[in-house]
Image (cartoon, rainbow over all chains, first blue to last red; front, side):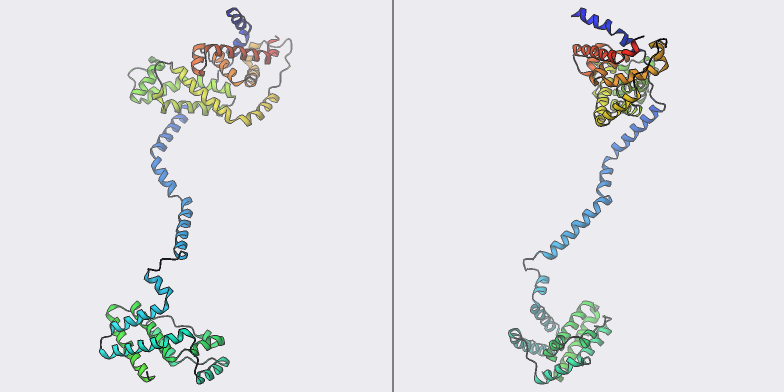
Length: 242
Length: 195
């Protein structure tokens, strides 16, 4: 065994000699400086690892993900039906409740007995009118029906109430409601409008104005404007023969 | 800072100094001693300059970062050759697909030379550099395990024991690989030996 090893070594001595005479390659110039630069760069990277992680997490590639998540959350909030306990949701789902709340507000803010009683009477009248309104749409009176026939051909000019409301809107800086569509528009709209008693229209507009005052009027002026509205409502109701 | 000139330190003393005091001078002294040896070994193994430099740099970076994993029971040279050998093998694996193509190309590039009877001797050819390419091409044709063993033994002049440690093999296996590698090279280089 040992002899065969010796024999092999002898046999391959020339190969070993040839390999031993191969010129030795040297590391390229600047090897050490490049090495030290790499080491320093790696040291720097290692120390700034947390900062880099933070940068990656806050980088622009994660912004679309965050925005997407926010959009999904908003859509989920809007789409998912709630449990019905939220007051805002109740107001959306129950318009009658909105009106009741407005009535309560009106009566609460009444400063004198006369206005309070007027509001009470108004609420009672509305309560009496509502059940029939719920059962079937209010049948227009004959004279209103005649008016409807006229309005289908030519839209009527804005009513006194509408003009009054436009004036109120302008006074508070609200955008004027565009009624051109109503006046030029379809017969269905005209019929619907004609079917609503003028008094109801006025009540509804008054409630809207009250809400507007509460929403946009400074506190020091709020009471004055509410009083003004209340007196106008009272005058109006008196004039229309409540 | 080293207390004596770096040339007065053995490799093992330098790495221990680097371990103890993070002395960058000790590390740089080791780099200065081994960069050419390792580059020669890795270049002969991979036959590509850029990859060889990358592998040697990575080897030195490993030495720098993992200095504490060196145990003084072994020679520093075998430890550093082990790292370089492993990285070179990894590089070879990465280039597996490319290497098939490039070996074919090298077959064309290193086609056997027609050597005239009255031509120079193999030694003279080796000096001229033309045989060097022949030998390098032959090295690249033998199995990587034989190539590593032959290069470490006949090019780098490491002992069988050091090669055994560096390659993680028994001495018997190392000797066998060296013999088989040499035999394969002799067959591939027979034209060079005719003279």
